[in-house]
Image 1 (cartoon, rainbow, N blue to C red):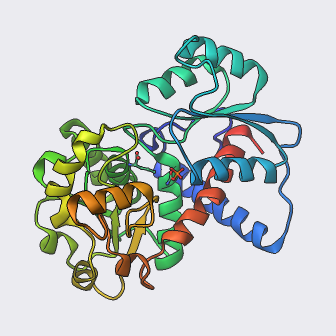
Image 2 (spheres, rainbow, N blue to C red):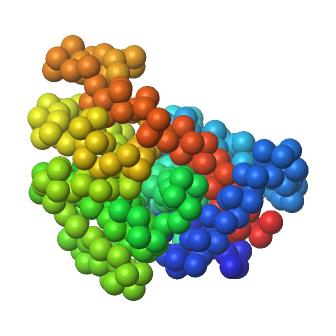
Image 3 (spheres, rainbow, N blue to C red):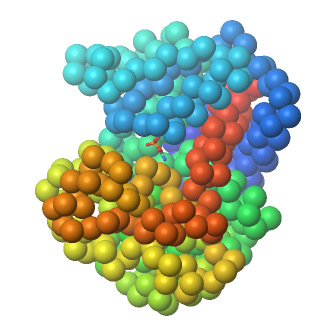
Length: 329
Ligand code: CP
Ligand code: NVA
């Protein structure tokens, strides 16, 4: 696998072999980290981290991974840079590309990260756009591989808003890696038809299937992996909460859903999650709509079947692999 110089914008751009190679590299870095073996082979290099939306996991993963690899990094927060307000993406890309060996971008439309990559002259990594969250997929795939020893033949079900970054990205990752993907939601939350068609092509090549269904019990029967995400994503207006809660409550991950899947099933969530009322928004929505949780019950979230914190840790190891492979560590 030689990914030196490549950007990492969506998994659509990578072959199953390249994705598998990144997972192998992440597993190697994880083992080395646990054993305290240094991997600072990118000493003297620097990366810029642009966040136009908030983050805990992605930012910390890039910062820790950069540090472990021996690199310096600069964090540009959602408010304090000139990006977009006084300076175009093209100009920003040229400036940062002249100072840094790689650039991470989290923000809105996929076209922004594509434009950044077109002008930067150095690898650009997508830390989440409205459409895709590819580094999250590597963490999820590594977690699934650690739990089941394989990816091919695994049945993964995503419940919730399947039109957004997480639903889209699971469909791409699963269809590339030979995993059966099920999007389970009201039909208006199904992924874009053109993306479904593209992924059906990947699924045909990898020998897997894509199913879109509104039926929770049919969808989750004998599933290996049950996934969900927040019902309202960053950047969406507050007005959509009432409709989302109404539409997606039947698609909440409950212990009955996990039982329907079976004892072997694991639960994944990219986090952050509204599984209780211990957050500002969770509390506000809880009071407004008489809820104690949203996309997943606290019981499932805290159960032994839930691997969400293993998944969160794997963000760092997989992001390290992406930076190392594309910068030629
Ligand atoms: N899963 C994820 O991307 O988390 P952050 O928003 O905290 O980075
Ligand atoms: N769909 C969520 C994912 C957060 C990691 C969002 O875009 O806010």
